[in-house]
Image 1: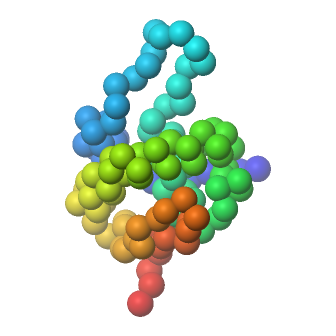
Image 2: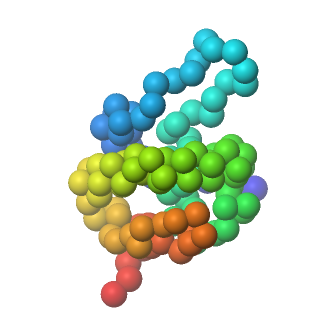
Length: 113
């Protein structure tokens, strides 16, 4: 399987990482997935319209990405992330119907009229 294309540039990521909860590194338990990869995975689902279970393996386990997206959506964090992405990425993001956990048909990066 070819590598998945990433969307976030370093400058976009730098403006997002301040919004995210602090890392759990150094704590007991399984190490957390990298938030940048999780956001890339969420954007991949948006861009492709694929079901969560078909998430490209480059982004980690689909359930991890889905659960983090679901948790961030419920807490209101995803709305903040999305607003920063719209501001920073401009034409790379055209429009999004706000996703809930049952609708992954958002137009991320697509040109629709």
